[in-house]
Length: 452
Ligand code: GDP
Image (cartoon, rainbow, N blue to C red; front, side, top):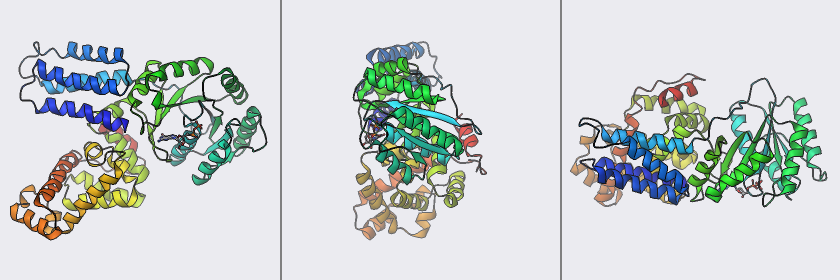
């Protein structure tokens, strides 16, 4: 998984720097070289990476920094700011308005993930209280309508399309009309793609756009093309008024970082990224939280949003209460592991937390992670209630560790590893101490505060 790998390399480089006793020129250079290598591997353009490195070196002048300055912090901040700069595509100028019907048209090459993304986008907004509808004006690809119909039915989103009509403009206009009458406030029009950029594709896009007068045109792009995303984004921008970009398949390609930075360089706002084939593998793209996660700092605003999305309503207060108390016991770890195994998507919640994603549950290695979690749970089954409910690390002395190892039939070293994992997660968890428990509807305001 591109982001986990890129993020892993960058946070490892930062960690190594943090472990060094003295921060000198060599330590800084090693750290920057490591980050540079990781970015180039993710296909970020050489010139962007070189400029980033030079800028950081200009900001972090080790000789001029007087003793007492927190050099690590200054370096981390400089890296964070520079990465934000590279990935910042500018803010989208369009936002959906309640009480008004918005028409959003999707364009992109065939296979980019356009149809899948239309439904993800509709589903995302449906969960936030909008009333979306889908129109399939893709008459070029056989099966496009069936695919949209299937996805829309699963998500209980109304759809419109035709097996017989071959004129995309006509379908688009009819679909939009129908859903306006049905008072849908978000009408999404999926258009045809082609295998490559060609005149027929651009002409069709223009015609559908003229006939439906979309409030927003979203360009969908496959991340696997890396830096080449720059030319593709420019070409689409020149043919139709692209207002936002969604980059798909960020889960499967080593070049995702390149695609993100290349699109950002065209100043086209990236609003979401696709991180898998499933409907909920879709994330709002926001530069600052994204870079924070990349650097292993965690993304608390994403965390709060995800809790709201994937943890059942009745379990949210309890989980938040435990978070706010800041006391992370082995029992809480056990319960969260149970959730992860049972619910699947809750894994996404914890992937927003620093520490949980890269080490415990790297994407693409779910099977191994699950096996590890099950192993930890077997060991915890051999613990006493006192041990599970205590948050005192000193309680787990040698004789207790030996007893647990005997009880679960695993080597002492495995029990030690599980306890180390617990300590690591407890440290992260403790950062949430004092978290104000939001009342209904306050969740996003809270997450903004936490991330400020
Ligand atoms: P279209 O031709 O542009 O409409 O593309 P589709 O929506 O049919 O998607 C092409 C393929 O990409 C399908 O197999 C999708 O399941 C897959 N796909 C779409 N988005 C993602 C994503 O974010 N991650 C992954 N792994 N696959 C995706």
